[in-house]
Image (cartoon, rainbow, N blue to C red):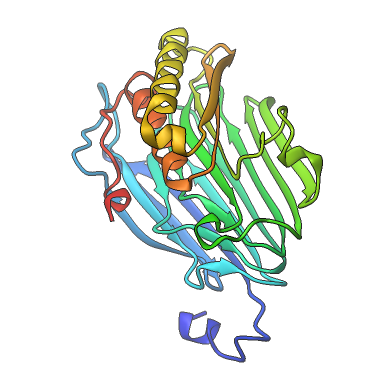
Length: 304
């Protein structure tokens, strides 16, 4: 189906159901795209060799940067997105988006399922998602990791458009992140609350902030990287960022912990999407060398 045919019709009556299935593997020391199947307006616009990224270790594979785009730019009432990403053994992929995913008024859904095979590495680095007032959001991310693979990633959610004086006063947020390693859950978080729920103001919830990010770094069972050292580095970065002028303006709150061997998690709260997103990227950069054996080379899209 062509993009032109996707866009035909009355935009006020338009409802889109879109899907994208991607599969990456290896060929002669190179990570390659093996499958790219889409239906509707959800596309892989680029799969390029990562800037300045050499294969890691003896027999290591090169990396691909996979840029995924939803051309309409947001989900309106009745829209649904389904994304599936599979990394075969040894593949190395960084995935991001060129812009924020917006959730407009009405009920919509977006579901992502990722599988990472033995020896593969995935970096999941989307731009923040913005929930407009009046949106009813159903968003899920499920990641199934082999016992011997690695992943660094984050998810960031913004309630309302603070710069425009809009708050999330009406609507509903249902969001879940579930990460399994070797078939066993290692992290699961879920939110299922209306815009008027006490969760948003509670100290055990969003503490009155409007931006929340989860960041994680996960190695295999046999990983030898120092997860305790990464916890210390992440905690120092969170403390330093909170003390800057931008951090104080954004009312940053953050914490990090070692969930289990080879699993480090951080949560960040704040009032400014850019400040929280930049801090999430900073934690990713600190994790990249110990977890993935790669230098902290920022994605080109983050500078645009």
